[in-house]
Length: 111
Length: 116
Image (cartoon, rainbow over all chains, first blue to last red; front, side, top):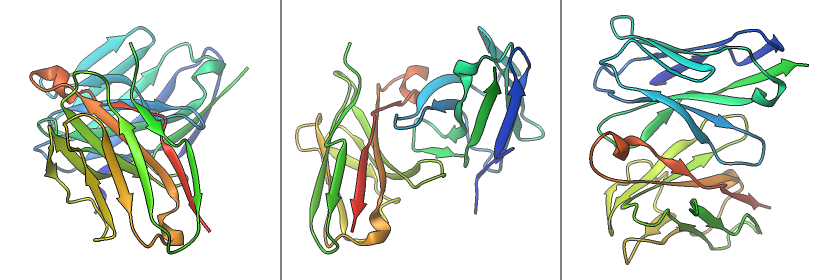
């Protein structure tokens, strides 16, 4: 049973465009939703995270939109840059316990 | 400050051998997690320590896998009788405890294990 479903698997966006990655979760006990960015050969790096009591969180060019009733959340990357090319993972956790990751989205920003 | 460190960065071993993978968490972080990441997949949870004790080991795939954290800092993941299916990147993460900040897990670079 896949608890966090992520789409698309891969995404190509022009430089300056908006990259959007979507996730859905099943367990309503989840109370923490982070996004991680991973470059080849590196460990995942925490990008931005949200709790379910807010519907949106913005940090620079990165925004999480959260829909609790639909059990969905998404990452928006504004003004996408070639340096943003990486694999992005949505994830969910409960009370600081283990993190459940999605399968990842490989993002490629065209120069 | 220093992040999570893992050694070795790469390990090649023969099927049936025993391996140990080490994790040094961020100083002051009391929670430590091990994950395994197969090629093209997201990390999958293995075990979680709070201090010296394993708070959740539900992700360990079988009894060939074991982890310790004897002094509440450094942790070692031990794999006995390795199999080719154990080949993956083994990731370690650590976090503070208490409040929202306890949810933030910081990952090391991983150990790439290859079983031949």
